[in-house]
Amino acid sequence: HKQPHNHNIGTNKVNPICLLQALEKVLPENSILVADGGDFVATASYVLKPRKPLSWIDPGPYGTLGVGGGFALGAKLAKPDAEVWIIYG
Image (tube, rainbow, N blue to C red; front, side, top):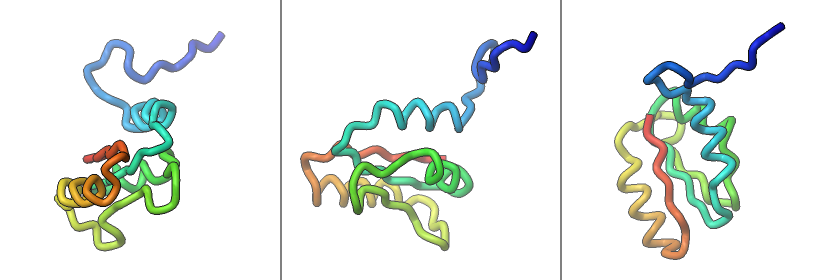
């Protein structure tokens, strides 16, 4: 018989897919997601669902790293009632 696979038991490592799936379950409707990084951003874009139009911000096809902080500040200024999340990776 096959054991259920738990990705985090007995390790100090974080499984990025499990992390994103857990985050997807708890993100409120007023969330703005700011993704900053390379491959992790691509993975996050398949798992996390933007809650509204214009609620997903990433560095685009050129993958400029380090823009997340500035993007998040701008998002919060533009939408002060939104819950802004930065996903670094």
